[in-house]
Length: 326
Image 1: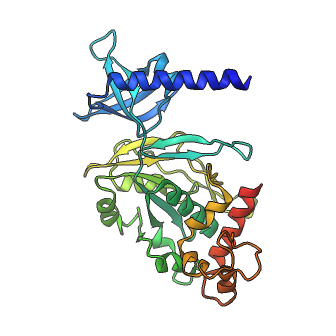
Image 2: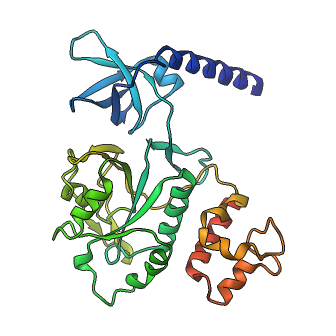
């Protein structure tokens, strides 16, 4: 069975290379803005959007998602087009469907910036989610920016203000916004221009409201909040990932709200690299392969004990290491 699977994978790889070679000297002419089944809405250079069918070969050998650069050809009708090949991806944003999912599902491609979107008040800010998004951005090699929503609803004594201080110390850009008052919207728009940005955040933090405030074409109405079980959550409003065009140039990926983020292709021994503040202390660890978990004389956890490293960030690291081991 394994031999047959390997042979099939090698055959598919040869077929992919052959198909890409056919279009090697031709620029892609479209970008996928929404994908569903064997069809994908595709935007072209003139700004027009067309629903294109995937050829069986593309469906089998490549698959497509929002952000993919594709080649298309005319179909039976003058206004109908077919996606005949997909260009190699620079980046892939994956999301696990569940704990048993080992590969993840690609929800966006060719993203170069991640807008980690959080609220202080409703729903309450969860530092662990921010840390995992930061790791994801680091793994992908894309720039993170922290977008704080609903600042007009956040009282000065909200404990969330203290929770974001470690990220300011790390030099991560922070933009406070309010879709209601317009605060920070212009600055955010400037930051997103000429980039492909994925909006990442839990349901209810206000991603859809931000998309509307930014004037993104096709932005959905905001959802409402759920207060069941004594916890404040957002109701899922976005059901599929979509690529929304920014009038000033660039795109934003609006993704379905997620309550848990699954990292794929990350090994435990590599996780420490994605917590850059550890580097200053890790050189003093007695072991070059120290995982900074329970090793004797670990300089990183000693720095946490001495309050030279943020203990909540270290707690997030330990939870990540535990999940990777599981």
